[in-house]
Length: 364
Image (cartoon, rainbow, N blue to C red):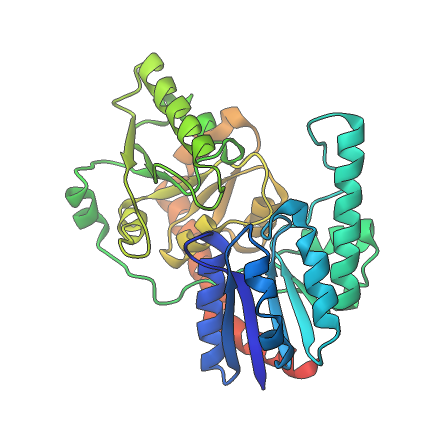
């Protein structure tokens, strides 16, 4: 079987590209002849130039997020239309599904046009995809109930977890980073929707050490100014409230060439993900790979995982984070959270999911 995985280059986008690369590598190990077909995020012509290559494949697996190709996602219409004239079967992984019930900022006209764009794009994905993959059950329900997509076409495959992630001794890493006591890690894209300021504002109630590890800019957001401004906002809160003894910022260029994040995960006791919105998280996947429990926000993504696996403790309200963190750090509770991490990895490790994808491709 000849197949292709379609996703952005690592230079233009980090989260989905990193996931797609590791997934593709594991699918190849399962016996599927699969190529990478990459493009520059926001530049659709870099993908359209490779359509002839895609048409020679039996299966084309597209990693989708609404604006990955830029131009409000409209180039995806062209991509699916061009693939329609090939002999390939199409699988689309939707990393995000926006609910029509969601409130958007801006005028009523802008909100209406935005929702119409999502309706049209989701219908195009439905029409031209032989299977649609989502990472959670609630995303499947959103597609079925709000967009009318047949449930039999929608498959829930949670985000695959790296099974052989580098692991370091926690105490040695704390010593290397000059940390002591409990360490609560915040990392990933520094943008307002991630809610990092929620933790920073109550750091005195959480205690040492809230460790914020960030890059000075962001290729994922394709707007480094937004990242820098939010990082500066969080730093300003710490200065104004005199929380320097509670919060530490480690800002440096962490990349594939310098993957220090695994050392930071190893040094952490808990990973804090206070997302204001969210349908998935690469940082959550990395936390599971490092077997580090997560404190999550009250969104469907974390609630579903907490209920089924117990590797996440959810703060129902913003002011609940300090108490939830204290409860999670109690030895008996912490042990259960770590056991939940192990359970999650055992069920959704990349090698396990690769076999499921192989069977999916063969069934089309």
